Image 1 (cartoon, rainbow, N blue to C red):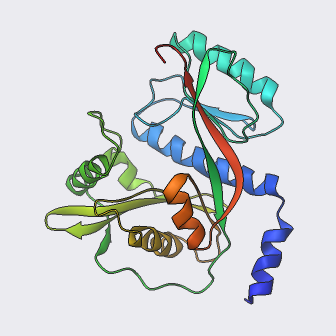
Image 2 (image 1 turned 180 degrees about the horizontal axis):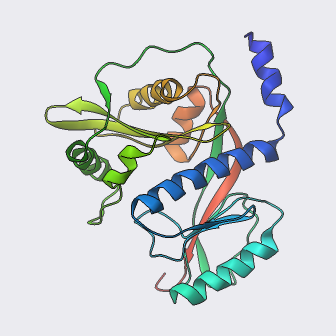
Length: 253
């Protein structure tokens, strides 16, 4: 495929459509994580939610439709009553203004998109797919060490039997010094949880290669990032296609 064909593929999709696909893929990841913990979840065309206590770094709600704000606000009120506190909200279209609803804005980030590479890249050296529980435990320890400190277990062994989830790590001694996750949706593949204990940009390039090889070279790659991570992904060909916001309760802020 020529560069002009790739560019036309980008132009054929509206920004709203690409953001919808990004948000839906992220909701697929949430669903996999929650179900691997044995936690309930619900999904409509407007949002994904869970009434359970969320694992660290995960919200209780992600929005899936920019025009369904009324439904989403009703669901936020229901979740608040159900949980006895205001839930974490991932506003996938930056359409909700919750400043006067007892929430505070934690951060905003950009959804990112890369058209299919079509030609398979070479598998990066030293990386393996995590397939067994002991290896997953070592992977999570490195993930936490890289900047996600929590005493709670986030990634459970049930994820390893999910055919739409691939967890990768770069071997270092008896553990891992870098890692990422690729998750497949019907129309895209998501890249998330990229980390490197050495802090080198190579992990981003390797994660893109792994996600491309994981499921299908015909699917676009998506994710979300901010700051230096966003800068690195843009250098590697990803385009920001929309903005999301994370809201938390303002209690104790």
